[in-house]
Length: 294
Length: 297
Image 1: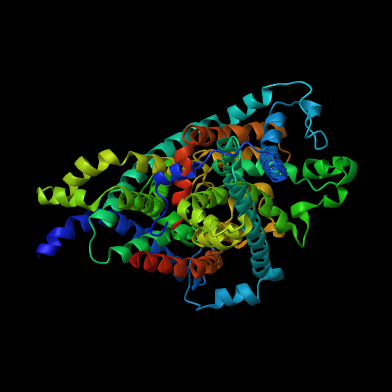
Image 2 (image 1 turned 180 degrees about the vertical axis):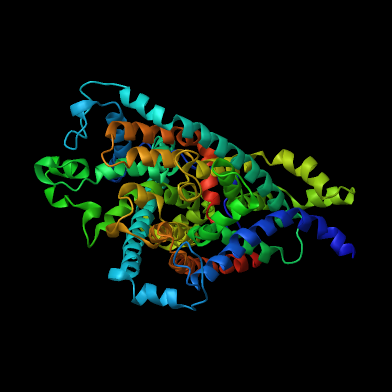
């Protein structure tokens, strides 16, 4: 609890320590009533998204928003898919490389900063971390010029580069804290005594036990690249950009097609929701990692 | 020399990242600062250095006080967002901590909005916060109407005075689950012995939480506040998606973008540097504090 961001192991610590008791007193009724009330509140927007996406014609209206469709139709899903498909594929081409590259960089940095330290490592680490909190608007004006000057192709390649660079702080943080809590110092020392250099120690000893850290950074970077809108709108457009731009164009038009917008919002959310449902335990670990200390 | 051989390779492995961050974080911030001190007000480029004039103009000479208005919006948004998400997150964590059957299910549902992008959730919140009242009401107003809670009906973000408070609702919806996860980990990180010791001393449940458990959660609460606080100050996607860029709901992060569209680079840069300073005032002390606390353990 003292030193570090919760490492992936902390997910286990979310599990209840004891089974809830079977007794149902008044306190317990209040407890369940509240828990279920908030469950409904949280699910309400999802309900509206789903039912509206299957509506057509006069069903779609402000006053009938909460009603189930009188005629279920998937026409709007088809329309939304046609509008979003190219950007949907492009966003995979963006989010997957970002997740992989950022994780590898993060692992190397995290290892150095936790187990192969040099004088001033803590100061350097703090300077790296600061990059995670800056409002990206403060770098955006020159950023546009500099990526053009370097000669990175506009659209997805530029966004991959940018997400990898600005993902360095969080990935370094996650791996630094992961190694600091799971890799014993003696293990690295022993390798050193045996004459193993940095790269050898890292690739042979550290990387094989880094899978939990990778799961967290991959999920984290995949989700943030997938959901990003700010970099996308500054550095790309509807023709070469990710799905958030395309969705905003679909849903933000002068007289938007509500059913198609809602279907589009669901399509846009499916990959990250799938990642979240399948890898939920680690996803939580990733969220925890966002807190510098816990 | 031997020492250098010892840690040199590590520094070498780290150096590409350090160079990238030196250029793309610190270098570009310096560059933006330079632009903010220039008179580059259009695409034709800069003629010279004007000192802090652009900053002064933002606070004293902006049309309709647009900048201070955006700061006021940001303040209202941030307050409602922080208070709302912290309270809900703590309440949910507390409910689950007290033991609920099917906890995993509740946890998953409370947390799922976090996986959705603000752009996608904005699509539905735009609808839920429909400002019509009475018979033509939709969204949340329709729910309140059918529950005979008409006094709760609101014009939401279209209200010129307190609209930004409504704008914080989707953000609360999206991030309360995250705060819950943080607090839940905090609750579960408290050693069982501490609870048992308190029980041995005959402490009531109320006193157990008041005097033993909640004080232990202070570091978690601080983390959560920092994370939410800096997210709030950078809030851009959600507002762009719910209301689009417009006067009523403008915050500095959007003002930067709107100004950039008019090619007023100097002004845009000045706004973004003010925004950066706002974030830094909170983050820098926190990072220093974290760094020190870590050394002491």
